[in-house]
Image 1 (cartoon, rainbow, N blue to C red):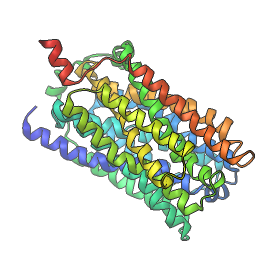
Image 2 (image 1 turned 90 degrees about the vertical axis):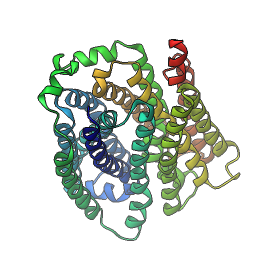
Image 3 (image 1 turned 180 degrees about the vertical axis):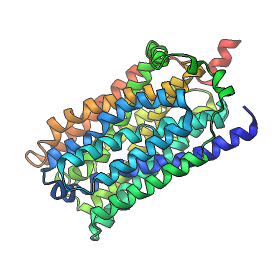
Image 4 (image 1 turned 90 degrees about the horizontal axis):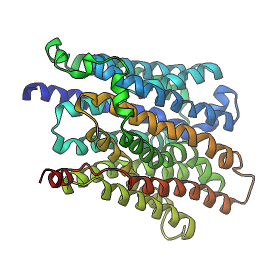
Length: 412
């Protein structure tokens, strides 16, 4: 691929970052408007959280479709379709109907499934392998900045009296506009390039057979899912309610504290991605990030007054940036011609783990919120996530090292 074409892919990647930013704004915003959404859809909080969680049903399954679409049709059509679907899903939240709300949330998940694989696809074509992990980390950085904005900015807006309809209207409009912008800036992959691409010659699910037959792909997805769930299920869905009920926080302080997890990702993803590229190792940085998550959760349990909860949640987010490292590993343990499918596969497994853990956590901890001893309830809920992180560390020892330094040793 020529250098000039690579530059166009980098430009397209920048617009993809806008899509991914909006993905996280829309994904995280419901956490700071639960009472308003309950009234809007005429439902209780537990049913509303289930409705919000349906996002992950379509997100995980459509990640597979996103991978196929990217490998078969390229980034231009795939990213347009994903962004447009997300915009329609956001606009459906304007309708005061639980059925329409569920439909909208399912469409939001389906559209967002194209965001990260699409950005990684564009980055893999625009950046060299030496800087790919850094680019992926920066991609997730922008996404989590969107997640932080969905709580830091939207929370105070709602608190100051902004109607939730206003948020969903402008979110939908801006996302649809971004869809058309992506369509016009993303390079069209010519037929000559496609004819030399092995993935184009394979059947629609042949690329996934290659990825899923590789045990390393499953290990990457499970590890990432276990490290990612504390942010998606706890920080972006339940944290505000838990901090209010169990810790006695005011709404504003609870929203700011929960948003600090996403803010921690803003720094953690690119920093950890840079470190793993710099030292040429994946696994040590992965384990270090997981250990930092455990320490931050233990601090909130054992010595909660050591420093402000905002700092604790920030450190949690900083460490959980390690969840993006398996996204580099899975691409390095699978053939180059399944770039899109490998990212789609890890998204499917990662958020499949989230889809399983969300109702489990809701059943055992969310449903008992406010009905039991607040201190023990909060501690036990954090031990739930610590257990998952410990499991992720154990599984990481079965992961093959794919960093450049390891590859250099093998060549020698």
